[in-house]
Length: 346
Image (cartoon, rainbow, N blue to C red; front, side, top):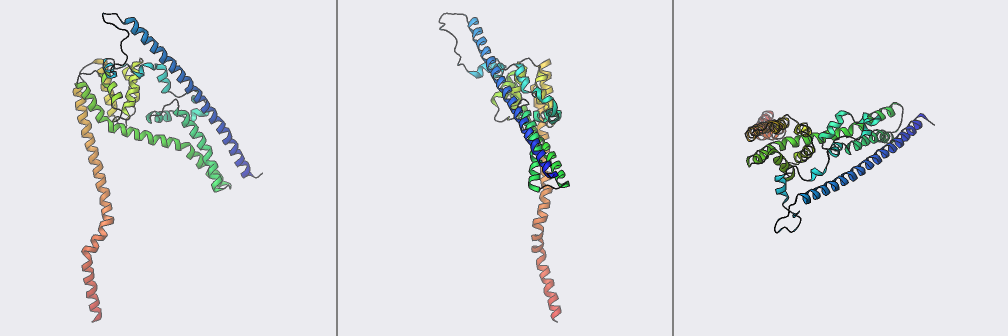
């Protein structure tokens, strides 16, 4: 066998081994997800049984009492009376922590090298669950690192240095493509948070103005305004669940503080943490902060308009200047040409 055939055979064997490894990763992930779903289902059933037993024990009979109170009451009233009640109450702190952490087997061997700490932060900022998304990220990196060199060698052929160059660039591209995709998704999500932040501050100030507490305001923002706060509503829902399961307000907001592309979200989180810890009025600081955000947004709009004006100047020079020269200087050139032709005729 020639050296090229041996190289191709070794790459094929490596690809087969990698596919087997990826299959084992997906099998472990499926087992873990199935076990987590079963545990969550059992916990929900246990919590429901405890709630029913507590209600029956606390229900005092009175004249005209006909049985258990209706369970079809207005959910919004219950939400206002108890903002930490709801779907998040059935999830335990361990289940939520598991969703925010990568599986343990990704911290060993080759998987740990393919999922660095920076990659975990990018997945977190991109809104990808570390429990499921990290395994897909590692598997895609490993598969592309083998598939792209093989594809390049099959398309471009083999031949000494050429094979090494194609294999090297294909391997590097396969390793970096998933990271570039996740980084672009995280950047779009951070920019979306910057766009949603002024509306979030205004809505929070409005809810505080009608007499709701911080917990009630955050719960309503997470559940009722998901159509306008597409990113922040999900992060607030997760923060409320963590806070309801025993985390401090600062710990539950840590993920939200690291999400934005600037320091404005960090300032809002710090304000909410201070109010939750020490108390005090939050409506006026939110009003001033909202005004500053609007002024900052107007300044960014003016900067973008200035950049567009400069770009349009170049477009106008390239497109309108030739036509303008023809219209304005055309008659003059024609007159000069006629004069020169008459002088040549004489």
